[in-house]
Image (cartoon, rainbow, N blue to C red; front, side):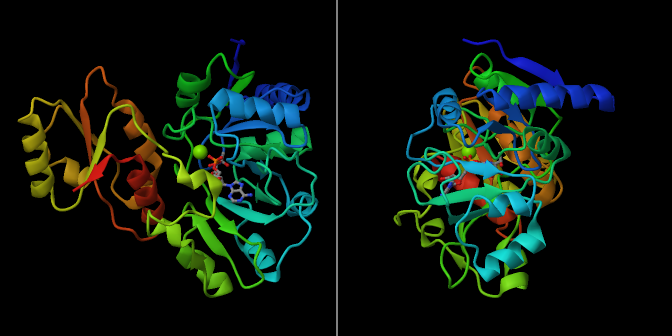
Length: 341
Ligand code: TXA
Ligand code: MG
């Protein structure tokens, strides 16, 4: 166990600056610190320091073959980490950074080899969150950062989620409030000259990408669970809540039928549904996730974390339309689910 220093950011700009400098010093000396980004909280280490990066894998219990994303503040810093940048990647970088998108590119070896888990490529993201940006500028080095959760659990959208999983295992935690997007970044492979391939749907949608570069391919493994995914991390079970999760398609009446059926087996049911559907449902605990897909995206992970074995035996979650950010929401829910009916 190590002691985890927590900085709670407030309206006091000077104090916040001081906190960010303390956090940057810890990262520069090889420790690991969690910080907010616009998608989810990240767990950061100096991406050029192999020993520091190793601490991330240990703290999260992350499989060694699952590479990390290197975060940088600017496009110029991104260029310093890669050996080649295809023209379409330049266009996408100009259109969507800083923002919730990650580019997999040929590595030039600047980042430590365990960031890439031995691959010849490196995933790079320029986050659009003031705290992440200030931390990157204060460090002036690329920061390797996966989501700041225990491997396999839902990603953290608040500092309390991070503390739940990693308190005592990390040197610091910057509390910058609830994250904005709520789903991790879109990961796109930009190593082929033919065009981008979506490896993980996220904050930037396929439709948005296509407006800039025309046709965008999607990793076939995203549609068919029998295919081996291109991205190493996606073969693992992810985002799993503490209790089993059942996804239910259909109307509020359909969902209520399933709730009643499961309650008939003496199970205590927790429900996640859109605000509209939630109004018409009755169970031990019903959490309304929001009025539209963007709101729902920000609340899915905290919803999954709310239910614990102590008071719930089964989570029933509504399925959502797979348009826009709905693609990311359903991708994560399917991975988290035990079953879909
Ligand atoms: O929004 C996000 O992307 C957050 C915040 C903290 O930036 N980070 C995040 O990191 O979600 P993580 O480690 O939880 O997910 C990174 C994903 C994994 O699926 C990993 O396998 C994939 O990106 N990845 C990383 N490097 C890769 C590479 N070189 N080639 C293919 N996939 C890669
Ligand atoms: Mg993750």
